Structures are given as structure tokens and as C-alpha cells.
Image (cartoon, rainbow over all chains, first blue to last red; front, top):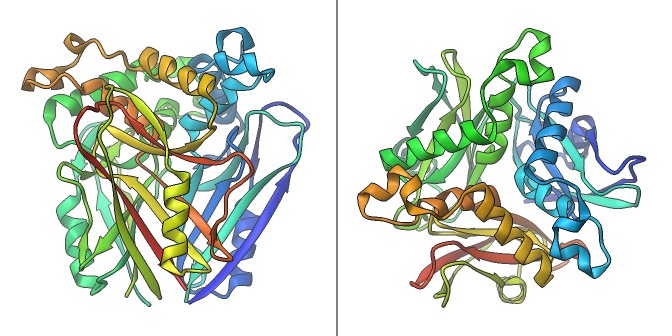
Length: 138
Length: 138
Length: 138
């Protein structure tokens, strides 16, 4: 079994941001030398997501509006924010979008459908955060 | 390490449909010869889901109503549809239901709880789409 | 390849409960002897979740309120409950929170971010239910 572990760092300028990480992850798959296996990509922070969806700016804005409707930022709504935080909404938004993706590796490449793109979804940015990439296989 | 990669094809008659794929995936686990490992099953299209829940028609209708309430089809609500699409809602619905499941394989079988059933959830159907099954283990 | 399979049992006192299982899972990783690999942790019941988020009581109450707003318990709303059940809402809540997490194992330990904690989320408790832990790697 081969294994590769790498960490990607992010520090967004805005509170919420959506960053395409497909090429970076694809490059790590090449580096791993794995031909057949699994690639786990997960946010290591609980106010961020890794998810797979479309690289289309209109849709990304639709996601952002929709998440704000499902879990509004408005700090006074949430008990968590009594601890001095203002990011309770980010913990909720991340549950909708998910913590992680697991992607198959076939013939040495991410085995993605035609429109699948990997995204880092930040819901409480403006500080350094990490994403974990773990590749195992042969 | 053993590995098996297979693709399941779907073309639903309706826009939204929920199809039980448990038996097909269980058969691929047998074919793989893996006794102990992991089975990844994921939609390869970003307007569809693979999820695990109940094979009960009333609940499936409840899911469909609920998803329509959380993310209504109504095309004029979404910026994505300015590209000529009418399926922005399907991208959102799929985030609620998830892209993939990872199921343990124990003693050569899917290690499922008593009511766990694997489903393909289609939110923008009436065209050919794929699901990936990747099995690794020994 | 090494593999370990274990089942954790839960019987909550209340209908909905959120239980930190990080230490139990970490102990199973040690027991497995795996230095580099993947750890799958999933609910085996379709009205419960395994998810990763914060060990903060206010936030847990926020999650509970939010899930009740997205998918109210109110049994008469759901077709599924015509079967004699009263737990349709629990099937929906679990889709928001997710069925499973896949966590990397690096240097023999769960490779978690600073605030990541594994939780069992029960949405229809007061009976015995299981969580599966499957560890593979080398």
C-alpha cells in the first residue's frame, strides 16, 4: 500500500469564499504514484467544507444566498455566540455542504465525472486554515 | 490490495427519482472478492446523490417534498439558470442528500445496519448519468 | 493491509441526543496498529448521524433548534408516519448532519484539526443502536 498525506493552507480575504482546489488535489494524486485507490479531502476546521459541485459563478452565488437563508449569519440568533464567537452560522452552513469528499483514483487519476470540481468552502475566513489530503492505494 | 471499479448507468423517466441500488452494489462486492475493506459509491454528476436511508415509499415522498421546500425548483430564483440551465435547484438538493457513501465490507459483504439501503437520488433526470463504485481491500 | 472492525452501542435517554465519541474512536485506532490509513465511522441506523463539529454545549443546542426548524418533529406532517412510525423527521434531520465521517490516520493517530470532535447524533433514541468503526491501512 502506498500513502500520501499533505495539507493545503488557506487564508481568505472575505468571511465566506469558495475556492476551486481540483488542480492542486490532482497534482497530489500524481505525486503519490497511486494508480488505484481512494483520495480523502477534508476541511480540518469546523466552520469550513470540502465539497464537489460546479465551477460556475452564478451557482456559487446561489449556494451562498441559499446557505444564508437556511442559516443566517445574524449573531444574536445563536447560543454558541454567547461564548464570544460570532460564527455559529458557519458551523451550521458547513453541515449542509459537508466536511469531506472521498474520490476514487483510477489509472493514476482522480476518477471524476465531467462537471465534478472540488471546492474549499470557507464560512468564517480571514484566518489561516487547513485542508487534509490523504491518498491510499497501490 | 484488491480493487474493483465499476460504473452504473441511469436514465430516469422523471426529473426527480429515487432508485434502490443496494442489490447491484452488493453484487459488485461479491465480484471484487474483497473480504475486508471499503466500498465508495458516488454520483458522478453534480445534480444527483448517492445516499443511505429507508426503502419506504411514504418517506421517499417526504424527502421529495422537503427538498422542494428547502430548494424550490422555480427556475427564476437562481442566477445559475441565467446560463440557460433550469437545474440550479438540483445542485442544491444534492448537497442536502450528499454526493457519496462509504460502506464497510466485512466478511465479504456490505456491513449494513438492519434498515440501511443504498439509493441513487436523481434531481435533474431524463438523461444518461453515471454512478461510480470503487471497492478496495483484501 | 491491516483492518479492524468494531461496533459501538448507544441507548439514549432522550429522543434527541449528541454524544462525543472521539476518545472511543481514538482508542480503536491505537488498538488497530494502523499507522497510515483511513477510519470510517458511520451510524448503522437511518435516524442517526455520525458527524464532526464542536464540543460546545451552546452550539449543540443551536444545531438541535436549527434541525427542528428545518425538519420539525410534528408527526402529522409526514407520509412515512402513516406506517405507524412517528420518526420521519429523524430520517430528514440525519440527512442534514450526514451518515458517516472518514478520518485520516497519520502516525498512528486520528489526523484531526484543533477543534474537530466526532459526534454521534441521535434523532430517534430510547432504543439500542449501533455505530460501525472500520479502520484500514498499514
